[in-house]
Amino acid sequence: ASSPPLRRLFAASSPPLRRSPPPTRPNLSFLAGMSPAHEADELFARTYGGARPEVRASAPGRVNVIGEHTDYNGGFVLPIAIEKRTHVVGIRRAHGDVCRIVSTHDGGERVYFAANATLVPGAPAWANYVKGVVAQYLPDLPGGMASFDIAIASDVPLGGGLSSSAALEVAVATFLETAYGLRVDPKTRALRCQKCEHDFAGVPCGIMDQMVSSCGQSGHALLIDCIPPFATKLVALDDPSVVFVVANSNVKHQLEGSEYATRVQECRTAAAVIRKRFPQSGGVESSAAPLLRGATMTELLACKDQMSVLEFQRARHIIGEDARTLDCVDALVRRDYATAGRLMVESHNSLRDDYQVSTAELDALVEIAMRVDGVYGARMTGGGFGGCTVTLGRADRAEELIAALEGEYTRRTGTKPTCFVTVAGPGPASSRSMRTLVRQNWIASSVVVVALAATCAVLLRVHRA
Image (cartoon, rainbow, N blue to C red; front, side, top):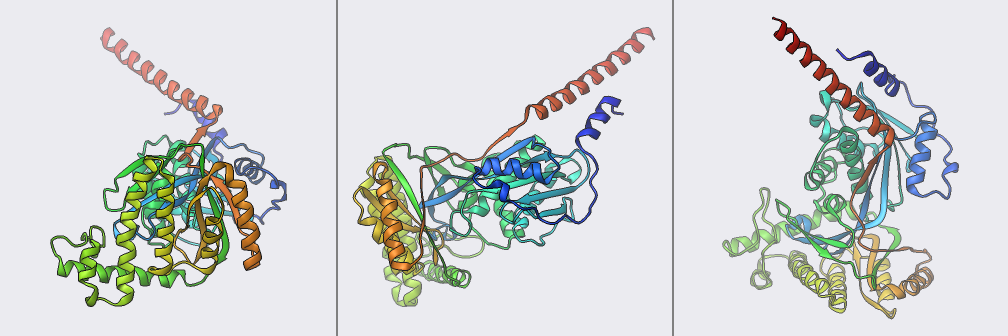
């Protein structure tokens, strides 16, 4: 049995929780002007009776430099982790299965749930990204249960195609690993977070977002092969003379869901036609459907009459985009930014004309950016039908570029874009408070002392016998 000091320690740090309805949401005006990391700390203290968090974790959003709509076709993508991050802070409770979460995004309303084998999605929708990650980690946790209090804050823009959901998932996963002392490799973490999005958010996303948020490194892009086992390659992007400028059009059209599914099917049909004609050299076969990965333009042109115009256009974009992505990697390694920028513009034109997922607003942002001296290239990024563009340019012209985007885009559309500069930032990070480390070390030391004392007692009895 545990010694009395151990029982007192756990009792002091983990009072039992009652499954009572959460109180009314608080006024969050006190967070004005704070950084997201500070927001999370202060929200935690205000929500949980002045307590201070013992574990802090964060993970980045992402922007895709090139390689759009290639992930579900088994192709290549080249994202970077951006410097905007989601922060999760909190404490682990030693007993029970009740979790309490609060977020600045939802106005500070608390959400309670039981983290055990019965865990299922529910309302509010944003909390499912937390629940889904917890569900993936339950087999690793003591008794298959979790209990914690956390607060969440973020400066990753919501709904802008910068993977705020993946940032939240990876931040929660990193919090759990730190709080429970788990060792999970970054790729496994990414796959768990992807499964969370599939099972708890109902979004059949590819692996790109979670992979770069989990595996990204400062000063590097991440080339991802989107066919299992999802090989990755770091691509140096540490030249201080260049930056990326992300511009959010602040426009989102309502076609995205249905149009996404339509394009997936058009690509599958085109891949099936190519494979039928070229069974040995056509696209790669997945467990579910033929993919366009590995198909060539020559094969596509030979099959043009066997598919619809739209199917041909969709396949032409995917096959060309895979080639552009690999060529862009080579250009960035050589610091040939003019070539990399040209490939980004070609990617945008293909997304606009062949894949037809751009919008007038995104086209305007690209056009305006390309008129600014010192810009190498620009393109829409993300799924399309609104969202963001990404521009590669000289660091010393970034302010001029943002001024041009804000001024001209606002004049044309009546909507001001949200722009920010970023470089390739780090992946997830975490820390534990000194109090937590001291308590955990004290517990471990106490267990060792008790075990040694028991061993000595046994040896002494044996010696006397």
